[in-house]
Amino acid sequence: MSAEKFRYSGLSDEQCAKFDFFADMLIEANKVHNLTRICERGDIYLRHFADSLAVIDILKRIEEQNDCQRRLIDIGSGAGVPGLAIAIALPGWKVTSVEATGKKVRFQQKVRDELGLGNVLAVQGRAEELAHDRVLRESFDVVTARGLANMTMLSELTLGFVKVGGSFLAWKGPDIEDELDGAKKAIKKLGGKVRDVHPYKLSDEHHFNIIEVGKLMEMSDEYPREFKFMKRSPLGK
Image 1: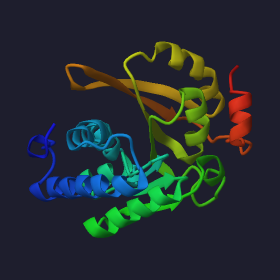
Image 2: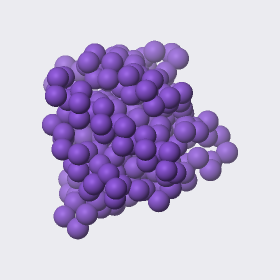
Image 3: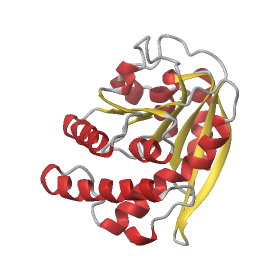
Image 4: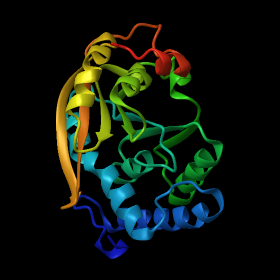
């Protein structure tokens, strides 16, 4: 996918130009800082930007809910996707982008400043620690995570940020049945329930799913646990 062909139907020319600039910055910064393995321009537009924007229609539907404050937190955002991509496409949403690696957070902050993304806050930290921060805990309409971990671990890392009634959205590949079945007990224990599975495709060869988990009740303060305990003793096992 070339820059000329990257025109998501809901974007203005100005927004598309911001994606072009974002791609330029990522290509240049990646030469020095190794921010992503996806560094060819066409792949950036397809596998980073278009993939991030697969969630836009879901967010627009959530936005119509009466209690939606349009607050989103993206966990493990890397070089800024999907968090910054969502912020460009939906400027009315306030996006907090969480990443543990300092060089990636600094790159995100530079992109935010250069593109004038006043709706973005880029934070360095670990999700399992920040989820216990009373300012952040259970205060977001939506939590997103793309390619971070399996659904059992991912649910423990993310559902602490989701307010009751909100949603957790996870990008996954084409084959999700076994992973979902294995995670349902953990999701229930954490106060959530699988609400829907949204299939999408980037091309005839690239088929994926976005799993939507709804938050039904408050999560126990004991979760999320330290990462080593999550890895050693997965919930529901």
